[in-house]
Amino acid sequence: MTFRIHVRVMPRRGLLDPQGQAVEGALKALKFTDLTNVHVGRAIEFDLVAADQTAATTAARAMCAKLLANPVTEDYEIEVEPK
Amino acid sequence: MIRVAVIRFPGSNCEPDAHRAVEREGGTAFYVFHRETDLRDADAVILPGGFSYGDYLRSGAIARFSPIMAAVERHAADGKPLVGFCNGFQILCESGLLPGGLMRNATLKYVSRPVDCRIERTDTPFTSAYRAGEVIRIPVGHGDGRYAASDEALDHLERRGLVVIRYVEGRLLDAPANPNGSARDIAGISNPEGNVVGMMPHPERLADDLLGSTAGARVFTSLMRWKRPALVTNP
Image 1 (cartoon, one colour):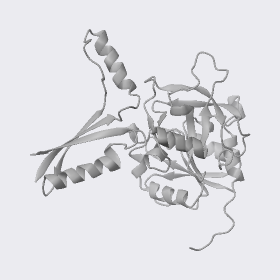
Image 2 (cartoon, chains in turn yellow, orange):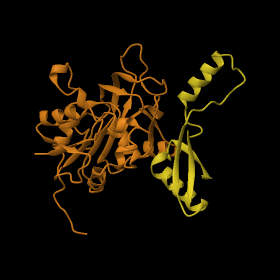
Image 3 (cartoon, chains in turn brown, red):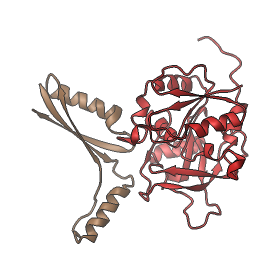
Image 4 (spheres, helix red, strand yellow):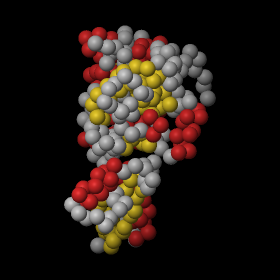
């Protein structure tokens, strides 16, 4: 089966996120004032062939642990979608 | 004579500076391409500055899986000297040879200027020619230099005395001492054994009289003093 994998990598909560702060400042300058906690991360998508949903998730998790996210400075979420 | 391998990744740009600084101190330096798998009997290894793999994904994240890195990791495990300057430090953190990580500068700006740094540890192969507590002025040039680690990891580094070099308040006007927002003003650290050192500043860029200062040269003088362990025991 082929799955579409969506990985979302965000700066580890609690660590300074200057990009998020800068974007928040810019949004507020544009009068979008009702917002807080802006964070900027990275989205990675790919197609993956795997036996089932569980196998696809396991593989994607291993990719995140090894390369796609830095476990020291980032958190990640994985979404697995059958194609 | 100390033989020093300078690893060349696609996007490295400080390898000639490192090569020259080693040879100026009387060592033999040679380049090893990232696709190679052998360090050719190097006594020491330098991971140079630059933008390996375009800094794609994260600085150093892709370089750490280069074919040569397996040999570099074995070299480190054997207790031999390994240093990373700037992008080299990022690669060492990404590869887990040093703890923590290097994040976007707090100012979001690329910073390229001299910084004042205090040598905190002189018992590493790269700092033994400095006096403990000595403050030197050497350049930094980076966008992702903010050292970050968990509070426990930072406490551990401090307790074990693994901070090798730290940004300090100097006589530089109109510039914060800490150029990037690094935790605890950390500019460079070592592993517990002391043979692996990483730092954001560029000592190799200030190691020639022509440039008006040789503040960084003693990193390489230190390395020339390093002695290969005399006794090799079989396991």
